[in-house]
Amino acid sequence: MSEQRLPPRSEDFSEWYNQLVLRAELADYAPVRGCMIVRPYGWSLWENIQQALDRRFKATGHVNAAFPLLIPKSFLEREKDHVEGFSPELAVVTIGGGGTLEEPLVVRPTSETIIGHAYAKWVKSYRDLPVLINQWNSVVRWELRTKLFLRTLEFFWQEGHTAHATHEESYAETIQMLDIYRDFAENDAAVPVIPGRKSDSEKFAGALRSYSIEAMMGDKKALQAGTSHDLGQNFARAFDIRYLDRNNEQQHCWTTSWGLSTRFIGAIIMVHGDDQGLILPPRLAPYQAVLVPIHKNDAERSQVMGVVEPVRAALADAGVRLRVDDREGMTPGAKFYDWEMRGVPLRIEIGPKDVEKGNVALARRDQPGRAGKSFVPQAGLPGAVTNMLAEIHASLYDRALKFRQANTHDPRDYVEFKQVVENGFAFSWWCGDSECEAQIKEETKATTRCIPLDQPGGEGTCIHCGKGATEKALFGKAY
Ligand SMILES: [Zn+2]
Image 1: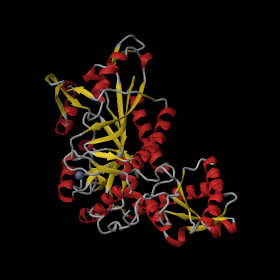
Image 2: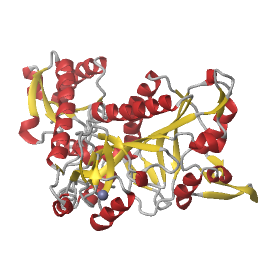
Image 3: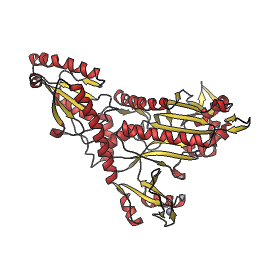
Image 4: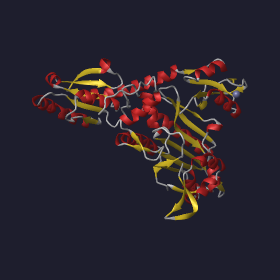
């Protein structure tokens, strides 16, 4: 194992990220350009993300199902904006079983169309509504510029698809799911996010309105970390999803869709990581703590291991995800380095001196060096570890929030705006006009990330064109 350092995060953020993903063994490159192999450690992190979300989906009445990977190409053409938006990114299957197919099939880039087709068959009456289904799957979008987790040809995600009787209900669902993403990001991933509405030009192809949670990465760029779409009746009309209302009249349904992907792993890396590697939020970390026994000879070894076993059992009973690293032929220093790279939140060391004193040494991953080190009695260790994990979560969240706040500005004029979006977010009055937005993008490379739901109220003048504005938008360069 190489103990070579990562490129400093402050000097080459992009290369720091690429090497970290490989060296922490989260993912690897695939033979097909732009595809990704998710390694067991990365997949274990994704499984914890899945569980944290799935629990919330089920608590709000959703159920899981599975829809096909292949979709008739004609389905995508039924919704005009949808096909326009997705055509350049489609992978199309034209040959099957050795023969040319009568109708080309697309590998799903998202599943609104195939699910719309199914809902049209299943929904007959207002009694069948709402339909609240989610699926965990992978989708393919033929991206040209790719980066592990952030943008890959195939990525893993969940897509929720719901159908409702009224717009009031579908809108409430859209906002509810956005808030579930916010809650997950903040309380499980320790990633502070700004929930808001997408501008017309940034919305999902085929949606009435799109909403997102936006996070600031360690290089002050934005990452869209989850989206929730109010699809209005666009897909219900395209796929004829109708129901008989209480007055026995045919009505089109109102639908939503919402998704969060393996891209979120990129957010976790870029928000929390440091020059030593990954720092995982304790609630999602595959291993919340790693226990490294320290011994120089067989006598010390048996003395130390006599304490390791009861400590391991006590932590397991307390629900701590623990890995005991008793690999032979590897120095404790090499093990520390390895687990720091992989971002395990807490390291527990037990050596002969600790055995004598009835202590263990704890080292926090988020506070390198002496600052993060403490000694606690073996008795009561599970409580101390649980508390420290909660503290690490809180401190990761606070640090990320302070960083975002320190790098979010309210520029006085467009000259200042251009400066601040070079290196952070601008929260500015904006007229809402697409032409104005396109000019800002052209001149600064910054885009509207979202129009935050939390608005100051009142009115102002657009930061770019000076026209009247009733809302402030968040601008920044984005991944
Ligand atoms: Zn304007």
